[in-house]
Length: 223
Image: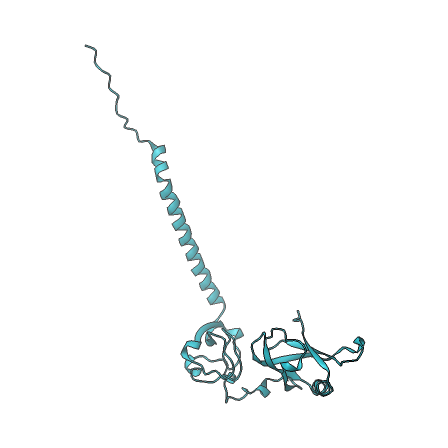
């Protein structure tokens, strides 16, 4: 009787199939090792940066605040700042700021100085006026058009025109005056506090008392 041939079992492993089955594992491992290498490189470079650039802990604001605001512990935080850019009089402890009243408006992340508080020497507006300038309050209602959106430090020109005069008589009477502060919102201030010299204050007074129409022009920032 003819015997049936049997197939000898294959004992040699199928390397190609095994490799294909392990491809997802290899990809996942490569991603994990890549992320780990990137994280280690980040911490290493950050440590080098901090060692190369000395920093000091100083108190900064966590939110925008108006003049007259009394600081709370939630509104101040200690932050590492490059020592070379920390101004004189900066606070090194949040306890020096909590409960104090700001003498001027301040922005988020701004470094708080001792002179920023009411009652401190140099905290008043007169101490912050540019040399040879006076502070003048200018109501926005004196203008024939709304004021452009402003921030302290912006500079304005004032144009004047008197009804009945030819258009050639329109001209700028005050140039490059600094906005020290304003009441109201940046887009709709109710009144402006401007830094002016005596000639500029005289020109505004003359124009106002003689019925001139006034227009504020926001100057572009110098490059």
